[in-house]
Length: 262
Image 1 (spheres, rainbow, N blue to C red):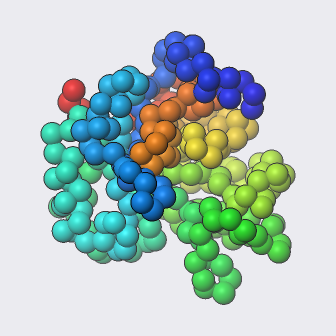
Image 2 (image 1 turned 45 degrees about the vertical axis):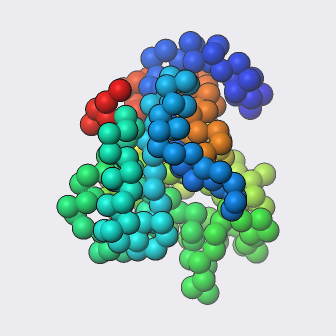
């Protein structure tokens, strides 16, 4: 872990050490994370992209609810990105989003990402796993249900599995114990079979090196994402550092096919 923190401090050194890796951040949010804080405009994000030498993919969020919840809101997002040299993505919630958004607009996106962080508990209530104080009385039961839920996420028509292997803060110290080889392999196999790239996430610093190495050996593709809102977008040094350590090269990464311009 220390070497990746060092990489974050010495960004230029890490970037030059990973010359064969793509300088992309496909998990950029333009809105601020906390209410009342200032976000960035598309043009401001472009300026940051050029400053860092990192090509951005901007993710709107929604599906049938949230910022994007119908064709009108998706169209507004696409229009806001028109002419900007950045990729256009959508991070979807739930499993009904294809019923709320037309195929005509979905094909205008460069990629769709999804994660499993809004998780249905046994009582049917959705649990937002990133919130403070989230705990499960039986961690192994949670993990078994969580793996099954992630398999549903990976079965969708998406290109990027975002926030892979995230577990609540209360279980973080047991990450290596709970992410057994069997659990890892079930999800890796699903990602490979469904042609879904596994995100290397700078914000949560997941997945583990052990997971990345198993996924590479299985033929998985990866993506790079800061998972930041306005502040910290483009800071991908952690991703580049662990990717290099795990022997990844440019051919192991998913990058959207459309050239978004300069």
